[in-house]
Image (cartoon, rainbow, N blue to C red; front, side):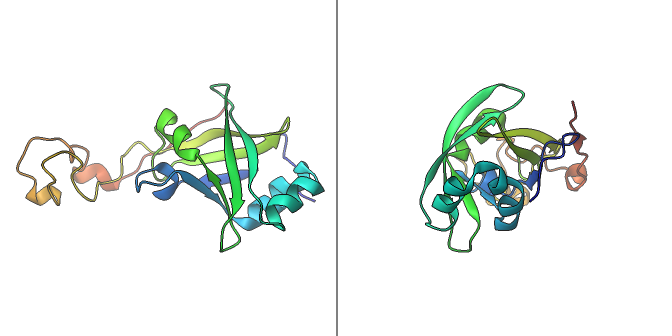
Length: 166
């Protein structure tokens, strides 16, 4: 049975993908099956684990932003690949402005799933297309001054992460 490391309580680190950050229109975050089964489910109890893991039922989970002290109730459900998704994560992403490549640490404590940012990217991912009304298809074809591609200079491929700690 895996237990929390009290010196490093985030036992489930998740590097955010485009779908985890709403940049592709999603509103869910995906947790790999192996991480939840070893790091979270042993702490939640057999009945709650069976409901979501084996019976494939939805379950309401209290998700708590540790540093901002804000709780949000999200829906956890097993997907077709056996991983677990938290629906409603988009409301947290919008509030925290998470980006693709950020790493978030999750841990179970006090009957809730807590999280805190661990590594935050300084560089925004290059947009695949302009998001303003001009609808430019790429930086090289953008003739307007919309600034949708403002952060896509030569240094944009260099990511300088910020490592957050207590």
